[in-house]
Amino acid sequence: MKNISKKLFPNVRSLHYVNICPVALYADAATDKALILKDNRDKSRIYRWINKVNKKTYIGSAMELRTRFYVFYSAKRLIHSNRAIYKAILKYGYSNFKLEILEYCDKNKILVREQYYIDLLKPEYNILIKAGSSYDYKHTQETLNKFKARITSEETRANLSKSAKGRVLSEEARAKISVTRKGIKLSEVTRGKLSAISTKTHGLAVLVSNSKTGEIREYLTLSEAALVLDVSRTTIKNNIKSGKILKDKYIIKLKNKT
Image (cartoon, rainbow, N blue to C red; front, side, top):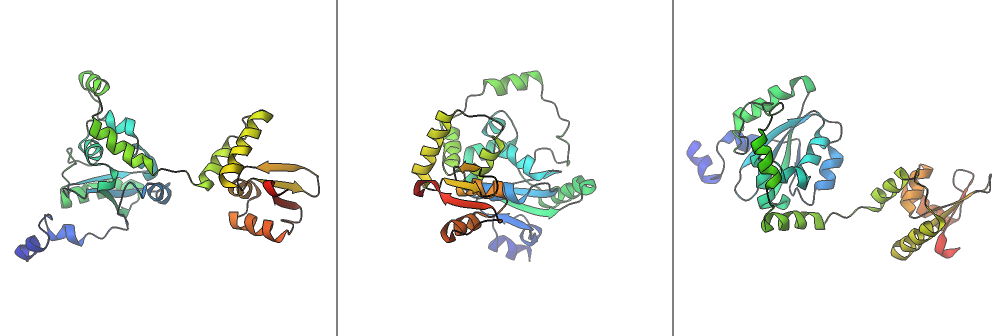
């Protein structure tokens, strides 16, 4: 059986590797970034990075997985670290890595389960083979000075640039950012410029009239209006087409058609 496995899977160490069935798989860490961050909020899991070029792997765990993945997607953190997995991501680029979620895990057992997978799969990028052994690790001042002096190579810059080019905020994300900035008072001139840019780009700036109070509010996108009114973007779109009153009081129209 061992000889057969080596012939069929020359880059696999054992049948244990082949038989691992992850609960989730992201085939491209570059294009799947948004999905990875969305799927793993407030969750404790064991995960594995796999280099699609040389098949080397890294196994880790996190109490709050999305927060940990933000670190992996931070160019600054990767550049100023000497960890093998970070250096590999910088060298090969996110598109040459896939990510597996090996299992959901109770927070009290997370290090035990991580150690299980480290012992079983022997990941090459895990320099420290004891789960959690890097949590309290402190770099020496000499090492920290080296990190600060490190100059990012042209190859690294190219990989980071390539992975960032496809990072375009969705209309929904832009709307959420807009809502979080509502405490910032913009001048009428600035609001006018933003509205003009949005209308020119999307053609979807909307006016929402409250038939009961007479108040009229302008939203730069359909998604922003939907978020504030607590409905879906599709509902806003259909409401504009039908001309019906939303929630018995809101009249919604496209700004460039008023």
